[in-house]
Amino acid sequence: MRTLFHAVLGVVAFGASCALPSPAEAGPPAQLAQARYVALGYDLGDGFVSETDVRADVLPEERAALQTIRAGIEQWGRYQIVVRPGQAELLIAVRKGRLVSAGGGINVGGPSSGRAGGPVGIGPTGGVQVSSPDDMIEVFDAAGGSLIWRGMKPNGLSGAGPPLWDNFRAEVAKAEKSVPKKP
Image (cartoon, rainbow, N blue to C red; front, side, top):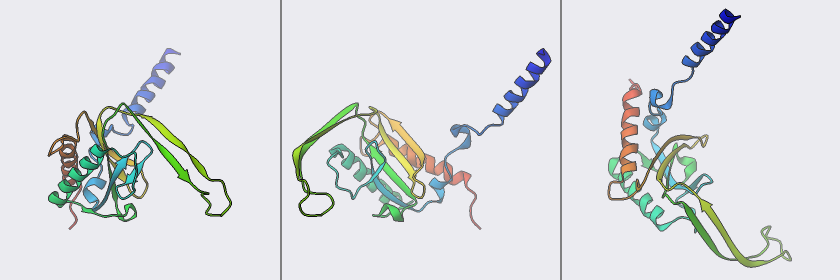
């Protein structure tokens, strides 16, 4: 019985050692090196929101951080920025850190279906959001929407050359070294 237990334990240990490598061992995603077109936007907690979507819940600090990232991409020349997320290969989103944010306003609206005679709503709106205190840059695969890279750091989107931007550029450089060149 003891021998059977050790044999099973050995098989389980071997299987665990053959499992997928950790992200640190796997290196940066090849998509960072292979992509050419990117769209910029925000992560407001419920996924990517394009920079062209007018949203009241985007903080002024997030808009400023995105403009800094935009300037960095344009100066770098590595990616081409597109306006429509559907034209992009990667979606790059920023989010300023905050523990709690609250928003509100007055909602004045008619029927959402566009038919006359429907209910009209007038009243207050509001919401509260709990989040990480760290600033964040996220990169999503535009085709599938999956997260392929995330950098988080306190005050990581602050300054002329934000630390998270430097981290992202370093990851892209690593990805470029690990992807074989096309003949």
